Amino acid sequence: MIMLITLVHVARAVEGEPRPGIDLTGSILPLEVFEGPTISPLQNRNSFEKSKENQVFVPGRDGQQLWKQTLETFSSDWPIAVTREPDFTSSPPLDGLIESAWLEPPGQSVWPPQRQRIRVRVVPAIGGAWIEAVMQTESLGVAPDVEMAGMWQAEGNNSNGDQNIATRLAAQMAPRSEPVYTLPAIEGEELFTGNSSQLPWASSKYPKLSHAGHNVLQDYKNFYGCENLVCLTAAFGAGALMANTGFDTTMQTAWQTSVTPTGVGTFFSDTKPLGEGKYALPIFGLATATGLLLEGNYAGDIVGEWGSRSLRMFVVGAPPLYILQLATGGSRPLESSAGSKWKSFQDDNGVSGHAFVGAIPFLAAAEMVENPWAKGTLYVCSTFVGFSRMTDNAHYPSQAFLGWYLAWSSAVAVSRTEMHFAGMQVRVVPIPMAGTSGLGIEATW
Image 1 (cartoon, rainbow, N blue to C red):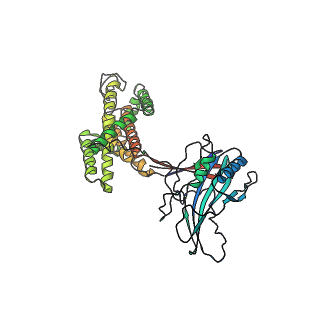
Image 2: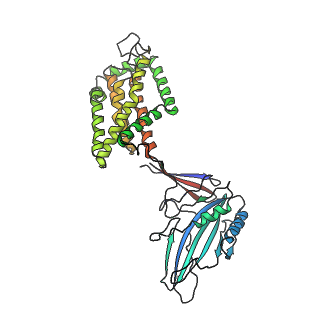
């Protein structure tokens, strides 16, 4: 899971549809913390209050007009007892207040008797105003207690008749072209969640098999997407320059002279078996099977995901690898008088298959970890087999590079599939700041 917090300054409200509140306790504070309901000064009586606090932002250029609309809309539902007009021009701006008269709840059949009122606070802001509303319920003869609630029911309150008063009030007064935005409450749900639709394999008779098929299909869509193809074209353009100029032969000669005879060269040569498909593919398959057998077990899930990613990387990257080996027509060192130059369909060594297979297990693991040191170490390890081919004088630098790059491109495609089906949770909260306003964005996947 990756958590990202971003501040985005904006000069006005962002356009969009109304959204439910989100839980950001301890992360981002709302505009102002509501002071809480005030208990009516009834002499010699105990009082009990329940309040439901709601906060929404209503965009508008004319603050006074927003205030008038709020008054008119409020008075159509509740008799007004107290008003205090906001001052949009002062610095800092002063908030306004509307209080209704105390009324007996409709259909009251409880004892002791109760009465209710609505308190609405209009807080000036850039590009509009925040509207905070709370319903207060007071009963007589009960020990004092205050229960606060946000947009959702408080614990123990299962009433289905509660409504978001502030949202309803703002929606009634706002034109259709001016959407209303709910300020996140103390408790709530994410603003955006991942894919809400049912996963495509959920209704299949064989869901695991269908899951694998959908994953591979999405892998191919990602691999052959426009962005990935542009990067592949650029990489093979670089490979073409390396192969068809003196770069490859110069680098290969230098490598054979300075690295191959050393202990580093011996180490690289010893890593060659990691790029053997006859060893790698059974290991990937065994890891995938382990994940299926130990599904739900932490270690089993990790091993299974690594095996699944590795197999899918091979399935996605192997066909273009084979085609590009033929299309480039490159030969091994000392194998042809053409050297490293491409001669289409005259040979099949223009891209290193060992470098491709040997990079897969490390790149698959790198895409699964978040620690930058671990990720970087795995990326370095993914190049070892490619270097072994240069050390053994079996491939030129461009051929090893292109094999590695195909593995990396396959890893990116598979990772995008994982994110596509896992979905992402994005939470956005308005952040008032001195002289401006902004958005806090938190993404989790």
